[in-house]
Amino acid sequence: MSKNNLSNKVVISAALAGAVTMKNQNPNVPYTPEEFGEEARKCREAGAAIVHIHARDPEKGIPTHDLDKIKAVIEAIKEKAPDVLLNLSSAISAISTPKQRITPTKTFKPPLASLNSASMNFSVGDFKTGKVVLAPDNIFANTFTTIQRFAKAMKKAGTKPEIEIYDLGGLYNILFISKQEGLLDKPLHFQFVFGVLGGIPFSAQNLALLLSTKPSNATWSVCGVAKAQFQAGLCAAGLGGHIRVGLEDNIRNINGELAKGSWEQVEWAAKVAKIAGREIATPEEARKIFHLYQQ
Image (tube, rainbow, N blue to C red):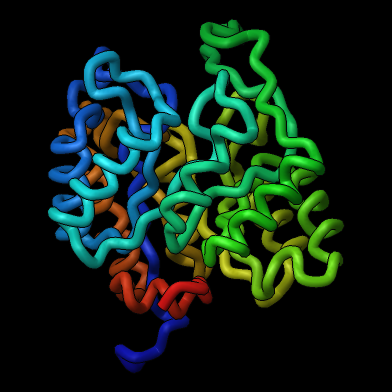
């Protein structure tokens, strides 16, 4: 197959930190701009075309909506990995207001930003005991008003929404509002998220249902919490999708050991893609595959 055939390319994204994962779980989670920059460099060298960013307070390690701190992280990443594509979170943290969540995208105008698709319980649990161990009362609020406002702000910024799908209801929310003229440019880009407590777990059946429901021309990627990261990534490689990995979603490698960084999981994704007979997309190729506004 031709090396220029974009349909055979896998776009690998690396979610470097997230809003929850801390250094006491894995010491390689980046907090400082320097740590983010170095981690982005390693991920880019391993094959990632995109890095997804939840900036952190460099001293406390908590997620932050502070624009100066976010700017410092972005600058450090661009210094270390100049061509990598930035994907900013529009979730940020459980206590961020809608205005605080969307302001970084409006300010920095990244090529990509997450657009969440539904309100939901969003917690951390022990799946062996059925106990909720963190944030049992947390509601991740994404009303239709919020979704539409964020979509309009992203379009104005020239930012492509990466539409986060945690369950079938969220997908149908997007299919409904996408009927509005000019709200969401086609083709859409979805990320199917598996394993969050409050969302759907990974299974081949769940992935097949989402794929059969999405628009046929929409691009798609997968990410999964813990072992679902590897299960979903393996299936996406074989089915023509794209793969997100990173310490935001999973602190371990396929062998169960703590990951030395998101870059180790990127290396795994690149190997899986090649085993599936596919090639790794560069950032420039990812722009074309995901139909990004910014060129």
